[in-house]
Length: 321
Image (cartoon, rainbow, N blue to C red; front, side, top):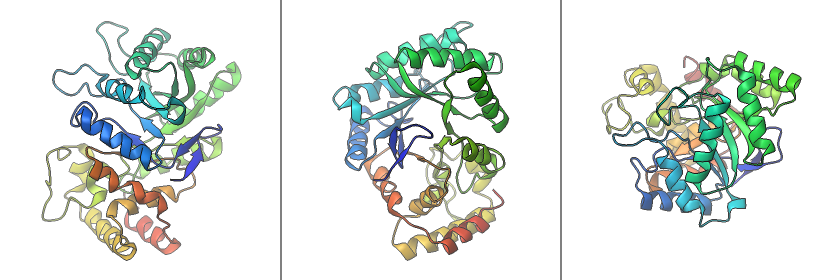
């Protein structure tokens, strides 16, 4: 496994990050532990979760993924594992049960620490922005957590470029910690959202970029075809999938990905991840897995070296996305 610095920091993370959103939801505890063990054995040291995972499941309240991860983590060498989690979503009833206010953040981090069974979080991320809270209040609260040793670094997710730049201005003038990472929605099949403005900001500010959904909700694995547009029910109603399954340009791009994959004798997913890893601003795409076999299908992507012609082919085939 290859490792890279997290933005401007000296913290080294694996070139793939394991997303644990499914843990405690569609993936039971035993399988989750098996996936985690396989990831660590394969050199992955970077794990991503959120306090709201998996509140979309009936009967769940959020924190289920952190609980599973915490049970596994207490049996590991904590220093070897980089844990990233998030704050913003609703976690309890009441006016302050969600958001990025100091009040909510201070309570939410304590709850996450308990569920994760650790005394610090390596990367604490704002899950998405909160228009009702001044950004300087959020950054000040995060600064307090870093100074208290409860958080090592902070990151942002789902923030537009102008807001990210504003945060760096505020961090500079108030001498507060700054966002060292960004989690954008980015893949071969969802390019413009990141490439339009965020890519230039991240390059200029040396921001670690940790894209989520790098396999386009499974579309970039090749499991969706022109003749089988509903291979399973897990993501078939997702917004991105709805846009792709009836798009001939998307299948044409998959045809090119398939040819490249066959020429290297690798899974199609490796091509999608290899394209991301070849970009200078990308630190570690987040790969999810509901089974060990799914993880095995992606973990080898870090060894793929696409040539310039292949990258140009992929760029041209997906430029409309």
